Length: 136
Image (cartoon, rainbow, N blue to C red; front, side, top):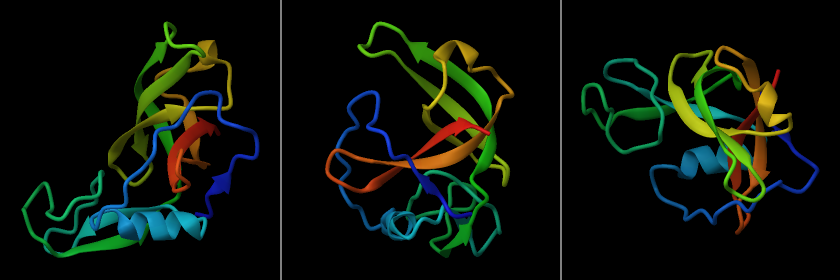
């Protein structure tokens, strides 16, 4: 899936990201406009977030697989006390793993469990791209 870059400025500050060895393949792919998720070579399961060991079998045989960038909102909350308000959600990826991210590019009152979403990248405060989701 070729990730889209949002052209408008983020509606809230995005924290800086420190490059870590476990997430470097993800960040490199994001810079190319691709969304990838880790797959364990030993048990074959996909997982999220990037880490050195598989959370299911503890193997260090981790490879990266292109993902569709499509998913559904599993759970969410809207942080209305923040200025400006924003939505944070668990998104179940079409490929299975659930990841925490933000829902952007929509009226926060329209966010619903089960809502179809698609990936967009927004730059972090120091440049690396951060995966977020917008209504599909």
